[in-house]
Amino acid sequence: MELSQIFTIAAKEFRDRMRNRWVLAVALVFTAFSLVIAYFGGAQQGQVGFRSIEFTIASLVSLVIYLIPLIALLLGFDAIVGERERGSLDLLLSLPITRLELLLGKYLGLALALTLSTLAGFGSVAVLLWRHMSANALYHYAGFIVSSVLLGLAFLSIAVLLSVLARERTRASGLAIATWFFFVLVFDLLVLGLLVTTGGQFAGDAFAWLLLLNPADVFRILNVFSLEDVRTLYGLASVVPASLGNPLTMGGVMLAWIALPLALAHWRFKP
Image (cartoon, rainbow, N blue to C red; front, side):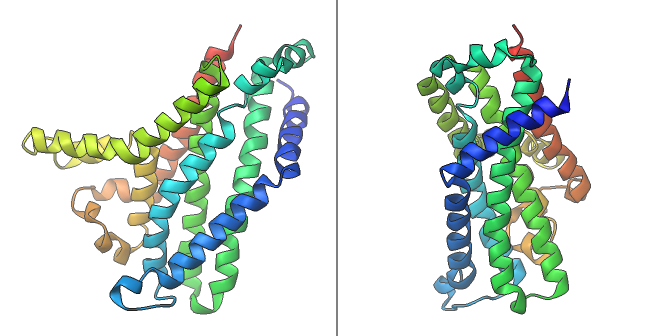
């Protein structure tokens, strides 16, 4: 495996995303939504303006869980199947490049575009609100940004896997939307339904370990347990054991969610 081949493909993929202003558009969306939530998130309680970093992160967690997985899946679903439909995949594979180098180059280019847009969007909010934040608050906000990037990379990895599995772009886009529905909207309902129908037999540690099967829940746990006040805002503090509150443990789980789908995509992409 030659790194120069991977970086060449990644650079082309990134330039294509920059050329259609995709990065700028997503960054503006993140910035606009984040500022609105930071300033008007407490309007229902009769308060307007920046309140605290705990409240801001707790509000942004929901935004990130809905928005970033959707953006990542839409960004990566046609990475391979799109080339196949355009007839350019055979041309690429005829070049002195392996399928693994092509897969990693595509992923890294898309990952760079997604990471840059996330950092630009949430970083702009930090610049605008830095006067309201202490050094400790900025530290926790930086951790929130890093975990948001990891969440996006995990769903981008899933999107590349779907792109390898699907034979048509339309089928890949349908799978991407279905994946978003399952992990963001359905998974937690299934877990809660299992908890209720079994009369609470899966409560406690077993319930918490089931949450690790969903990268969106891993992100939620990672940020809920990063701040004491945020734990109180969510009900998970009473059901997730303290061992899963370790940021390094949750970061490792998120890295596994990035690596495993890519490994499966490589295995399935072999001739």
